[in-house]
Image 1 (cartoon, rainbow, N blue to C red):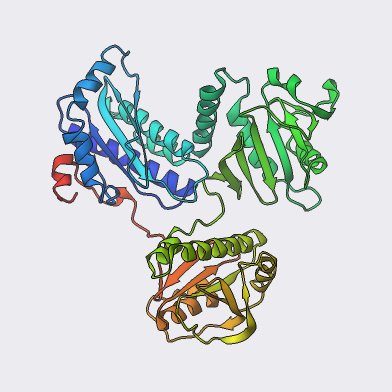
Image 2: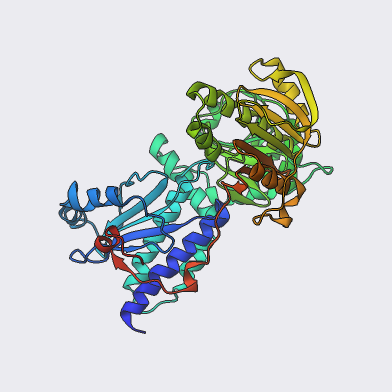
Length: 480
């Protein structure tokens, strides 16, 4: 195979693996990279989905203006390092993006980018994913021939190891010791417990993993006799024991091998905590969520819609900043409540000075959400069929409202009546934002008949053969 073609395939193959892997772990994600394989090579860019468009001025500043001597800096760093050792490069801090890369004597410079979605628990696993892509590229790029599909497969299925690497890095950085806990097996046990029902019920409660030398510092309510301590690998037994701590502040404590006992006190800093919440849960380091898990796998989502697009719409309106902020907080509160309760609902946010008349139950007087006692009632009104009518002053004017309108082109029959009615109604009524919450948690923000937070879909990058171009040309607007 032609070497130039082989090297381009190496890059495209790894980028595709990262893209598919992250799209399963997070959501549809674009990936791009900037690199120079040798110290005297021009900087090249591979950005098949236009992820870096809009960041041209910052990239030009970093590579051609402010940091013009970056090559000399890297050469000085890699000169004293062994062959093949990847020296991490700092995050380029581009707005809305996560970046990770490094320098090496075998591959002078590379930096990988992907989207920083607003509903991510932590960017740590994603950074480890990009770091792994950089490591695999060094190996594949410098081989005369190799089974490059192996790297593609690794990166498509890297979520569990990315989480494990992120846990190890976080604990070593803050605790300054090598953990005795084997992380990958524990992650598999967590997923298996989450899939195991006890008398028809999903797991609830908290399980903490603490290094053996820290066990003595825990204030236990009770401990299990050493010779009877159940192994964590005995998933069915652990699922039964979780009944003892469900719906309480009690926690099962494990040393990574077996269950030691039960505590209601504090656990050591940077202990690994697992919160089972029914058919989903969260993996935490200390007090920070690292990932969520459901449907038998790990995910990056916080499972709560951030609704950035709604916040931007309200900020861009002619409302006072304080008024729009309060309204956004109220809507967020109601949407998250519906999501946690697993019921669908529709919120009509009416920004007109005179509210649009809606057929339904009209409230007299309107219900002010600025009074805390009314929040609980508003959450209950969301459960009733029909939309809740909310105005800019955070007052509910009606509930059980019917939305109608003329047929429009962008309807999606797969989404059901609630969604399509919202599309039609918003298309016919200006200054109306409709928030639709589905029972399976997706949140749609609809304005002027368009779902503005819809995720775009694209063909995988191997469906065509994009050309690599220099970063200099890219910054001048040349398309790949």
